[in-house]
Length: 373
Image (cartoon, rainbow, N blue to C red):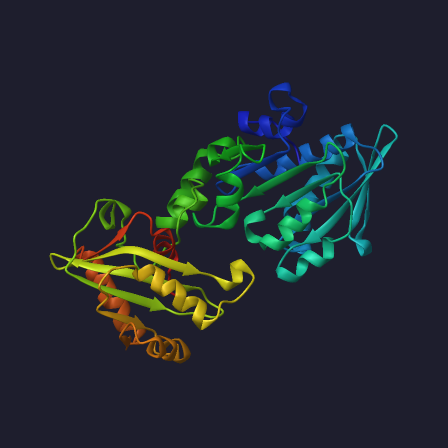
């Protein structure tokens, strides 16, 4: 592969590790549009950094699967390195390759991070650096295990990906907190790839629309098309002012494996306002809560408001019984017809008959992520 020219952002990805202005960074994150030239420049830089700063070190290059990593990264990389004077020996059966340059030899292991069980594959190894291709497609447990392996002094981490939805863990924990984590963040668009012609870029613009255009062409972290509630608009449906209501109810979407989400609603002028919420994800927290613990949260959510009724998913029989046993609230079984419920919520959103307080972050996230199968 012949590299004729580089964009300014590609040059940053190639040289950041050797520039004084970036000396305080422990990692680099390159995200953005497809075909924007970030992967090749980063992979060459990763090897160049490793061969300049280490001798006899172990490194990891990770992808969604080993097959996709070899196809998209390793094979083009080894071809280019050979042209640049590096000597590369690949051990296919053992999933690693060794690179030699000026009497320095380093080993690069190849890993696939396709599911939660993949973290065990990389566990135990001590690394001088890690390169994670399409990191947004990997489970968080694998990525964090790979990062934890980088315990050698002056080790660094390299991330690249195309955008996913704006509530993706990598976006929220790494891109939004890049400075806090001492990570250099570089955002790529198709214009940052000099090898793409105007005709090719125009073709990509024609191929995609909506959210996929935003992701693949503009490189934005946005929710997918096919959303169940495309009419949800934070500028219309989020409020911050105090509301005086004449009726109060609590809705309970009860889950054991799935999250539990309770909302305190108040009616004012024929509109319903979600004033506060309780949200608990046993998967995220690592421990389940009992019916009694959820009921305690329900009472805290209700506070001193005169609650007319508590509307509960009818499948949560044990929790409904728990509410009845305490005798404080009237529990009512919800209509569990999903399609009818979605239609009613859509109508209410269009008419701006339901609104959400800005503090109700979880329901805002859920509304942006609900999409049709």
